[in-house]
Amino acid sequence: MFNWILSLITGNYNQKEIDKLLPIVHKTNIISAEYDALSDDQIKAKTQEFKDRLANRETLDAILPEAFATVKQACKRMVGQEVEVKGTILTRDMVPYDVQLLGGMILHKGTIAEMKT
Image (tube, rainbow, N blue to C red; front, side, top):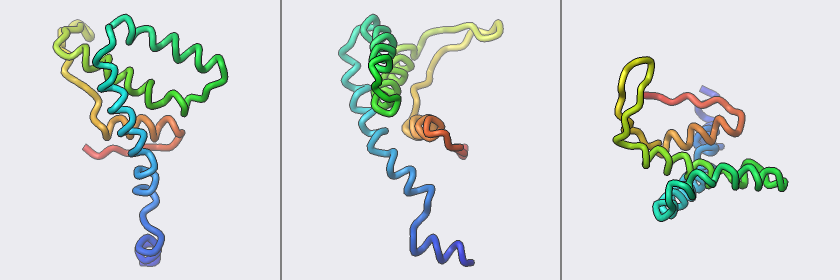
């Protein structure tokens, strides 16, 4: 009962944390859309770019939206491709949803994310 009253006054901690990350999810989606114009080789080159930026003391948090956008773009480009997994041929059909980006960002922060399905 006390926790319920306290959450009414102070708000839900989990929702506050999610609300802090939503602008990063939005930025990631904007960057991913911009990456539509890049070639496959330019997308692949992002890995080395990120390594170089980290070597120059840029933080993981600073490159996070671009890194997640690169992964989202790579997933998008793989849709329809067939891959073999443990002897079974599967067709790739997944692009990360916003809630999955959010879950990855929460894990990046070192906290635990429970995703209800």
